[in-house]
Length: 363
Image (cartoon, rainbow, N blue to C red):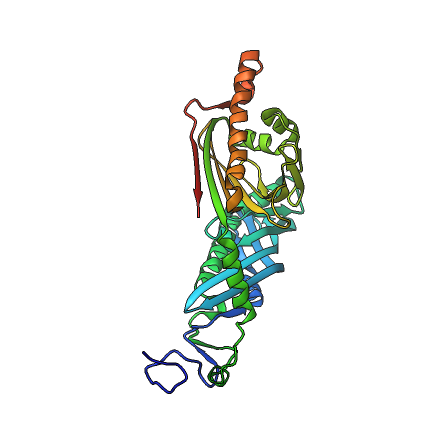
């Protein structure tokens, strides 16, 4: 057997005297925030949207703000990107008549509050505003939503693909790494880089957590079900428990008589609810991430999909019971209201008789 440090040439995996990290075998982390800012500036700033179609001239002018964090970790040649960003753009729109006379010239803004590696492949929320809300201004804004929004989503997708391939580290075969062969030969303990320590600790922590997935089907519009989930009075009626729910991103909520509390991370009416959930019996600082998505495959039929990650393994059954309890409470409420003749038929709300009730717990 080859023995390290005893001159045995069969030992080929050893520290290089120059400390070079050959083929990125050791952990290496690169800050990509400036790379991200440059990439989005190059791809979005001064980007034409319309150049005269219908008498409209629209252009994204500048990247005003990009905040958050972005990095790429590479170990043993494997690329592990991570990013949580928000950005704000400015745009200009002008309408001209057939004689090239300007009818209206004004500015607007675009905000993308959350771009994350966790949601790569999904379309992020895009908020578009325009300084003029008159008839011509509305036409310009509608044109931007129709033509400009898909372009922005395309650029975000290009960024996600670039980061998945290593971002600024793409094609790099060697980077500097701490430590030296001399230290190893002398028997000195070589400390792991801080980034590698953090990653190992995170991996160790994740071993004690689970993911819960649930799908349920209702005969109602997605927007109505969203309103029920975000309206504390309706929540009380459905679950027969106290609740206090903020409808704002960043707002806090408490449900199930205080058993669960958390924060709204991202909300889109009729489409999704993204929250941090915490149960009262969990250790301090432990939160799970809950994402509820509402899909309407046909009018009046809504599929609710719940994915809850970072659930402590020892408490998975309690956590699973809560969404089940909510679903069953909704069914019971519907039956009670039907018998009392007070069903919300005018809004088309009715749980499906063919109820999908699929709960999965995965590693």
